[in-house]
Length: 530
Image (cartoon, rainbow, N blue to C red; front, side, top):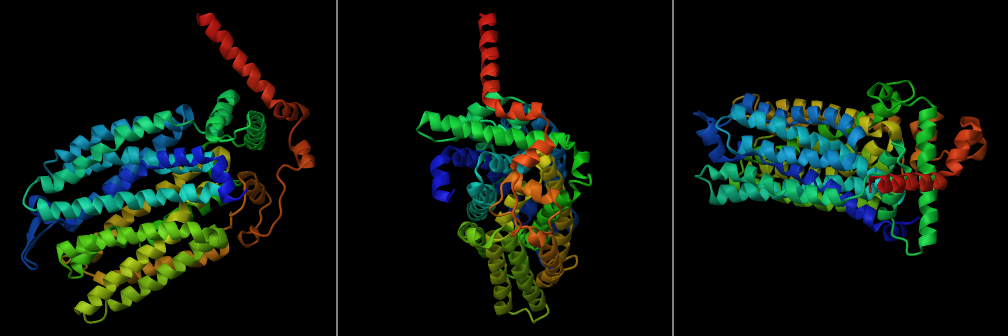
């Protein structure tokens, strides 16, 4: 099925996936609120630096502020897996949104950096829910052809949030430079997100994969009916039954193989390779220059640009990033997931090596502007390769039964290295600490090179593969370099007979009858209530 055909059949899947992913905009917005680059914030909470004649937030507090959201996200990710397994995606996300609305009060009315850090930890908990559930939902409700576009849209949500945040920060600097509202307003605007997003999520259908795993076949069929757009009712019923059988087959096969969907299972001999790949892919996002891009406004200031120009450059950076993400949608069909990721890390490494070397050159205006321009190019390369494709890979690689938990493990490792980033970058850039400036590019270039080499040998190509195909390729222990060319047939009748007994096959064959029985039970219960 081509993209046009898939979109005409699944437009509702695309819309609901976009709705669920929109919660990521909130996190992108907050991570972009680089308060340490805002003079009024530094004057309110910082210390005077006699050497540079400016108010500055101490490096230890810069690191703490950068780490706290990651700490909260780690907690949220762990809770999200258990809660989502029990209550489903929709209600879990709605609950996290309302808790976020409460936690924002602590940041908005903060009297100290400690209160801000505490608020960041608490806000990080619901953000952790969105980090895993948004990409998992997108991968489960859309067809294979649209999977890259809808999972990588999460990266666009990050960029939209960061762009919005940069614009608000520049407005605060230009119009509220001498008022406490200059730093309070950006935090207060976080309240505009939870209610409309919660209402939209409430109207969305639940993931049919989650419903099938819970043996709620009739509800899964209803969910698929809401996701499909087929005018002929008979044809629509056939498509739904076929999809349900495949989902049920995949779920039952994993259960028959001993998959119990636990965190421990993610590290079993059967799944450890898949967990490792998903984790390495997401860690690579953080260690290949993401820290510098996330602190771009502060980087530009330390490179010698004015505060106003620094915010302008950050806005340009995120606009370029959005263009890069859109470009990735056009090149992904030809290049594939692994190719985009591998050569993305290579290009990022080259740019970071160049930036680092320029750090040893006499720091003239031309050199400073060159380093700033390299950071813009780095953002474009990242956002058309490693940035968007990561969200697709980490949801395609895991087994369906432990997909959410594998994504949580991988994202938690990402957040742990985010804490590492949050510690390193302020010390690298702060003039009272290491003061590396552009030289810090060498540090991150080394990681980009390591991830490029790893990707060449260990990252498989999943483009054009169904979840069942990927499961079989991992079961047969196909090497990463042969993933693309190996032919598999997961629905081979002979293999199905070997893996299931007659009773299980009859259950799969009669799945439509099971739906009718389940519907009848619901009707009888309703009559009894009357």
